[in-house]
Image (cartoon, rainbow, N blue to C red; front, side, top):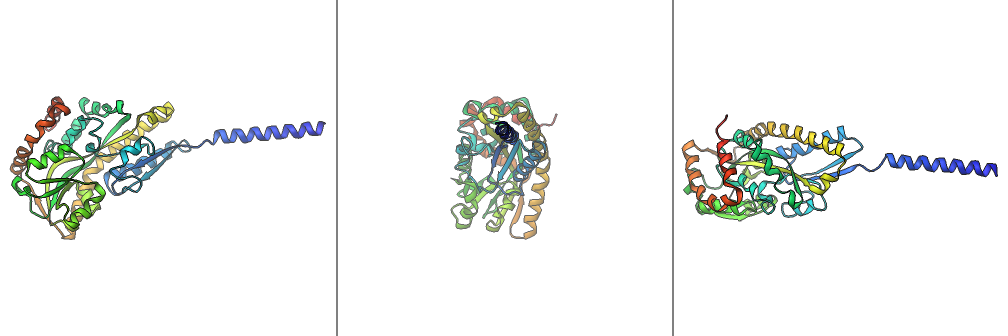
Amino acid sequence: MARLTLRGAVRVLAASALFAAFSVQADPILIKFSHITADNTPKGQGALMFKKLVEERLAGQVQVQVYSNSSLFGDGKEMEALLNDVQMLAPAPSKLEQYTKQLQLFDLMFLFDDMAAAQRFQQSEKGRAMLASMEDKGITGLAYWLNGMRQFTANKALREPADARGQKFRVQPSDLQAAQYSALRAVPRKMSFAEIYQGLQTGVVNAQDNPWSNIYSQKYYEVQKYMTESNHGIGNYVLITNTKFWHSLPDEVRGELEKIVDEVTVEVNRQAAALNEEAKQAILATGKTELITLTPEQRSAWRDAVRPAWKSFEKDIGTDLIEAAQAANTAP
């Protein structure tokens, strides 16, 4: 009996140790970060930097899987996926207009003079408050990631607003974007990011706009004769997460993730201008496309041409937000 009791005690102790080991070695929290751009873009670099820092500081607690280049979900499916299959995205503001109209502000062409102005607005009280405008829809905004200023590419030289007339421009799924191109008497065609190259190649569209980093990484310069350095819009992403998931995290884990997001955001925004300049020079080095740079007077003419299209959207965005954004063009 004594031997059986001893064996039983050993078994109990072994089982307890095994249970304790499993308790300590619980599966880490998984964050799937899906995005549609290449790894060598500001957003791609930001996602990889986020993964690196999380797995250094929260080793064994949080694991990050990054899916770039629409390899997991593309434009049309990523927002739906945030509710079930992924925990983090960084879409363009136009993808979020069904959840909040305020972020349409970033689609107003020629609103910001440069990236510095856009960043001043984003860091302002009004700019930061916009990140919380989707909470009631189950989406938490974490940060703004800059991706450089947007530039036109086309198979026709674009210098004056009249040059856009009749051109078939790819636009994001944004009624505001479409309205502005219609104001230019161009033909807006909504198309996902992954379809742009083929659309340009086949003539479904013959013009588009993107920051230099996307123009280079997606090789649009191979199928476009001209690039216009228009700096007409802020290439901007909103880093978002599922609100329910975010608030389900242990406080200490969420706190550390917030610190990491802040650090990565500073670095992404710092690198954006340099990465875009490198991409621009790499495109020019191919000799495959001609660069046109707008003068301040030409930019002003383009702004005047699209401004009437703003009127229908001002109420939804908020006149106060638009005025605050315009005020950010003047450095304090």
